[in-house]
Length: 111
Length: 113
Image (cartoon, helix red, strand yellow):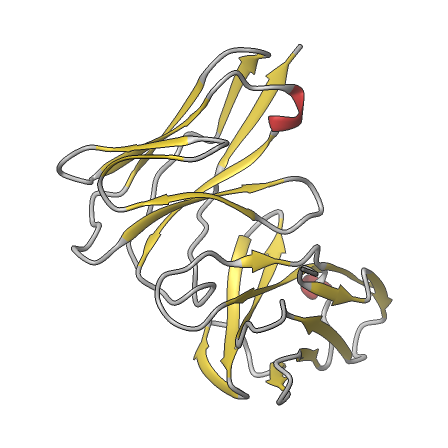
């Protein structure tokens, strides 16, 4: 499983766009990149998944450069409720099989 | 549809005891995985069950075991509890095949005293 490196923490003001970058230098050809969000004492929640270029859904965008050695999760106009830990995962596992979560990025949204 | 349900939500046990945690996956999901989350080690994979068979296992001692029933419900058992087993235990279910979205339950908070 490819290991990932993310900033340990980030602060942002409400209403700003937040970009969290994840490094995954050893990503394999078949690996997908997935981001999860976790609130205290709750299970992680899937945010977005991509393979290359750009993916967008109703809550976030995921930017993946051509070499795929990094990815950036973009959260538009964050609110206080976006305060959580964000995990970047890389792999080809089936569903929740052996997901490697790493340390994640603790995002704090400030009013 | 209903999400992943874990019971109980909170549990306090004494060192040396054993404990059984339960997980009901989303209807139609056949893969159930278990994770342990502690402040020091983060989220760590325990094992995965698919169609009543353990398909993958993380690096945990044999005191940690599990099983899956024909209705895909899963149980996790920890024997001879140690203080270090205090953690949030999370269950996740996913549909069959592929690198798919995993749906996590709210977890069981186990405290060993």
